[in-house]
Each structure stands twice: as C-alpha cells, then as structure tokens.
Length: 266
Length: 357
Image (cartoon, rainbow over all chains, first blue to last red; front, side, top):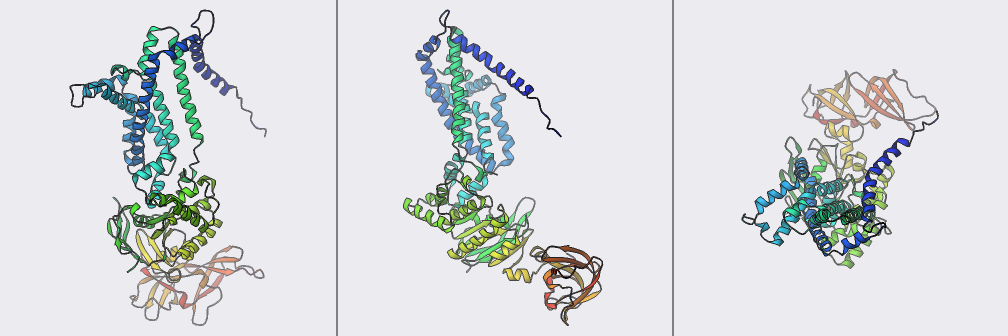
C-alpha cells in the first residue's frame, strides 16, 4: 500500500498566523521607534533612552534587585522542592498550591497587604527606611517569581533520582550542605538558570510593587516614559524584549553544556 | 564477637511490618546475601544497616559499636545501588574521589587512591569521562570503586546487577567476588536472583514477608531447605504432600504410594500431613536402586529443551518434574504413557512447615 501523504499546509498556516500575530505588532513598535526624525529612520530614540541617567539608574536598581531576588529565591526554593521530593511527597499539592497563589492574587492586593503589615508604625516597620523598603520589595519579587522558580526547579529535580543521589552522597560521608551544594545544585543547574532568567525578566518589567512602594525601579520608569514621550517608549519596549530574549538565549546556551543526567535519571 | 551484628531488628510501617525478628551475626570478611522475592524486607534490612531507615526495634552493632541511630554519613559503610547513582555532574575520577574529598584527604592521596581503585575495577583509562559516556556495566564498576575508595568497614550492594544484561551480569558478578576476596571486606549483598546468591555467598539469608526463613551456606540452602518457601524459592523443587505413617522409619504415603525419607520425620506425629521435597535432578525414569523410592504415574507433559528433556509425571494430587538428558537415538516419552519414577531416600527433604500451611 502506498504511504499516505499528509498535507503540510495546515501546520504551516497555523505557524504563519501565530508568527504574524506575534511579530507584526513587534515590527510595528520597532518601526515606529525609528521614526524620531521626520521623513527618515534613525536610532535617536534609542540614543536618548540609553543616555538618560534615569534609565541607567532605574535599570541598574532593578538589575541589582533581580540578582538579589534570584539568590534568595534559589536558596528558598531549591531546598524546599528538594525536601518535598525527598521526604514530604504528600505535601507536594499544598506547596504547589501555595506557589501558585501569586498568579491568582493580584500584585496590587499583595502590596496593599504588605503596606498594612509592614508600615512604619507596625511591629515590623519595613517601609520605615529606603533600605528596608528595598528588602521588602525584594521579598515581594521572590513571592511573585515563586510559581516560575518552583516549577522550574521541581521539574529539574524530577529529572534526576534525587533520593538515590542523596543516599549515595551520604554513604560516602557527605552531610546535608555537601549533598545540597555539591550534588543536587549542580545537577539542577539548568533548571535553576531557567527559573533565574524568568525571575530576571519578571523583576525588570514589574511596575505595581515598585510603584506603590515608591522605589526607583525600571517598571515605573517605563510607565513614566510611556505616559510622556512619543518614540522613546517604543524604543524601551524593544530594548526590554531584547533583554528578555537575551535571557532566553543564555538559558539555551548554558543548558547545552550540561553533562547528561542519564546516570542519575529515573 | 561478630563484626556486624543485627540483634532482633524490626521495621514497622503504619500498616505492616517490613522486617520482623531479624537476627544475624556476620563475621569479618564474610560475604552474606539477602535473598528473597520483592517485598520480603531484604532491601529494608540493608537500608537499616546503611542508616537510611531507622529500626523500630533492635540493635545494629558494627565492630562492637552500636550504630543503630547513627547518621548514614557517620557509619563508614559503602553502598552500591541498583541504579548506579553516579553523580552526573562529576567525572569518573571525581566520583571515585568524592568520599575522600568529603573527608578532606590531601589531594595527592586522593589522586593515588582514585588511580588504585580504577586499576582494581580494570578501568584505568576512564577517569576523565563522565558517567553518561560509560556503559551500564562500566558505570556499576565505577560505583563499586567509589564505594570502596573510602575504605568502608562494610560494603552493601543493593541488587547491583539487576539493571544489566545477562552476559555482563555474570562477568561482573565474578569480578565483585574476586574484588571482595582480594580486599577481604565484609559484604552484604541483596538480590532476588538465586543463582547470584548461590554463586557469590559464604552464607545466604533467605527472606519472606519480612522474616528470615533460613540462614546457611549455599550448599545447605540448596540441599537442605528447611521450609516449603525456601524449597520452592531456591532452585527448582518438587514439593509432595503426604501423610506420615511411620515417623521412626521415615515412611509417608503420597497419593496412596509409600515413600521413605532417610531423615527428618523423627518426632513428627503419626497421621500428620507433611510436605517433602525432591529435586528434579534426583528423580529418574529408571527405577532407583533396590532400597530407593518408586512411584507409578502418568506422563502429563514433556518439554524438549535441547540438551535436556523436562518431563512432568502426575500421580494423583501430586506431580513431579524430572530432567533427563536428551538422547538422539531415543524418542522422548509421550504424554499419557504410564511410567515408574525412582528417587533415593536421601533425596527426600522433609520441610519444617506442615503441608497445610
């Protein structure tokens, strides 16, 4: 019997529609960002944005906060997900539910909750000084990124035989810190990086928390520029996309160097 | 005093007891296998020795020291897992040297020990490779080298050959035994494969449903099984049920035919139904020697296996398998044919467990 030839037109059509849906607005934004000068294309909008001291200050601030968020998030999530997998598999649904809450509860509700609990006349007056507000903002970002970080790390942990690797390390004399930092962390490196870059992308663009806690972050700066300028917001949007894509590309690149986990795989 | 002692060990989970009344003394340098089907408690017992499970009751002593509640990383016990458990992010050399690095040994000592271990497992040139670049057999050898590198007091192997194919399993089995003998290390080996246990061990602990069924040398376990379970689990055995008619004379009646057991029926009440076992290799189609047992039956099934012809002869309720060598000049017997089988009195093993159980 002759093999049945399947038409490939359908899938390509779907791909084309999807690509157009995604790229046409992006191309429009990019094209518009080049129209700073009348009648010709130029990179002036980018030049203005990149030379704006506020851009550098807010971007630097958000980058710093993103890095702190990633460190705290990793130190919170990896041991938690590891412990749930190793010793408390029964509580997995509860932990998953908790980590999903930031997707369900709007950021504005969270930040009002923070302001109520941590205001300057409360028992824990985190909004009392700029540095403690930064700390509060960082913790709020850890909360916001929890769904992504937890899922990424949990998926990574499921891909290796956590229990056997742990027991193998323990039988060779390793205590918990060595098991975590020399055996588990390196073997879920790609998963941690995925979570880290997703966290970075979230923190860089976050507006609500930073704005209501009155901190000089990149999100409020984007909003400010968007409300007052014509071409610069488009340039900023393209720059933000470029940063996100760079994060994704880095994820792919660093993931390739990972030795196969076949030996520890289930 | 024994080197490794397990004194009345128990492990209870919420709904069942995984291990009950486990009592074992292992001498220094001895190779002991825990043999049994899945769920018999052999791995749980091994994990209690390793420290990954805490006994619900009982004491574990290693070289006279109570280690029952000691953390796994404080026991100096090497373990090899079924799934190899090599660290995927480390090279072979780093894997083998891991325990020594944890113990903060000098770099030069680690290098020498790693080289020594890789030579021992006959893989001196793979130090720079990652685990995924090795075959299953090579990975398991590296896992063995890693476990031995820390010079453990006891080596524990949890079904280390189960994931390998048959040929490699046999060769690695021989290598494990050779290495164990060379190093003289006390070894506990968990397996459900009777051939592995019989060929490797100084002693075998046969386990079933959390209990020790029998402890003995491979020769004892195979030739003198004490319970119906051991008889049926180790090797192939024909189990016959008969009524004891003369305990002192070793006589019992199986399906209306009298047979005699050379020993084992002393003290058994007259009239009790008892299980006895006969190995297939002890049964022949020719009548046994003059004072041997003879039973008449009908051939029920004939399996031609090449060099061996396996024949099933039914008496009434009971039946036996017997093996004969293939003779190209003689056609194998046909099902339905009436035959007399014979077996020596010494081949009749009286099992401890009454037949009703």
